Image (tube, rainbow, N blue to C red):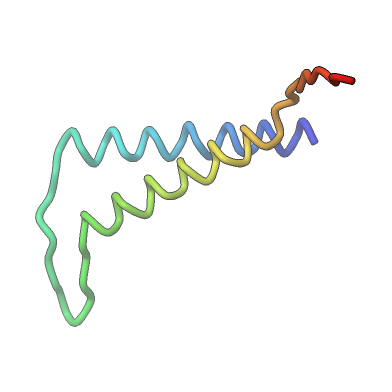
Length: 71
């Protein structure tokens, strides 16, 4: 499972680097030869990937639950 964790961390890091590049030099959306490029949608998808990675990493993180039983 640690290999999966490392892969997810790598995906998260690479995606954050892409987000940094896109937001540093924003570009307008455009359509060329019937192909539409919408940067805001692309950015939203990248944010979704980061959120997915965060959820997977949090689910894989061990936690301790303490409870107190009263009689």
